[in-house]
Length: 462
View 1 (cartoon, one colour):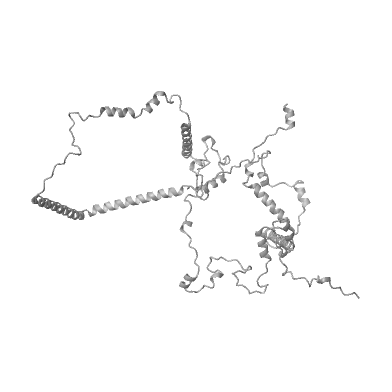
View 2 (tube, rainbow, N blue to C red):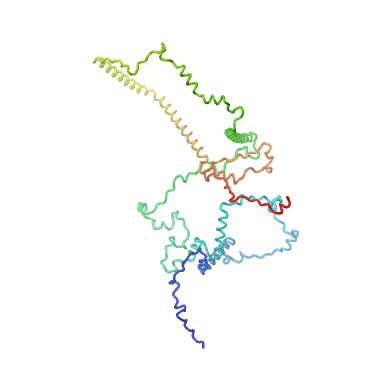
């Protein structure tokens, strides 16, 4: 008969230890090296197991359309009744590639040159170091805060299992189904069904009214513009010449702008260079004309010029009007005012006979106002169709894609592609004011290149 197990010394048994909930929680910073081992406990292993399980489930759903354990055997296995050896003999002992694979293979054996600028990414080294740091921390069980919160939410037990009150579905229940909060039959609106309109207006939070500017497009320009008729692979002679004329005018404007800049910045020629005589004339500009005017001015002592009275001369005295003169002037003013009133009344009576001509004038004026309004609207539409200034750079229209007369193909098979579809879509977004005009980021070297002559190279050159 085995002896009973002795009691642990000094009460160090499991029953005498304090419960886990009453023990103080380990504090400390997790991003320090001391906290790596402290936090790499059962929680980290459980989190990794949960992540592997979720990843496995997602992979099965993507590859097989559901869990493999729930699939029937008929959908997973099939009976192969063919003979691989016989098929290999019929094909000449080797597998023949498909025709589409042969077409997609490059014709040239020379590999394409590597575009160094295409592999440059702004802040690429910084992002790479940050990604490598998180990979090393993930291997040790340290996860970002977002990932930790997500896993903690997945590990949290549902409210019904903890014995608390069962929540209403559609509120904060994590097991609820998805629904549209803007729909008329969403669960949040069931409590307000059948209520009075005034009650709902005063108590319910109304939806935010969508502003009218969001319904308007940033630009009236079409997303895909149809090129001119001369840009087709088999255009008529007139259409192709019209397109060539447009391209010629564009190049002519560019050439004139360049010549203007060169003319403004260039030095004058020997014939146009200033001389001593021209400098003297510029310095004396305006002096000689003033002296001539001073010499040719008339003198006050000439006999033909009458003498004017000075400001100190006394003004002639006016005689006082008599009462008869004042009365006559008053009667004349009243007579003139009466005549003006009679004339205005007579003109108003004559206007009655001009109703037909006045109606015609009003009709013409309204037509003129309508024409001006339509002209303003057309100008406004043209202005709205133009690209606006959204950023530091201005929009530059792409160059015309035109082929010369000797470059026109004879058939559609001989047609060579012009331009780039990606660049065309990028310029279309800029033209429709969806993105601002941009330019490629310029990468500057932090340190200049240092050339070192190797020993082997020096031995050959010397």
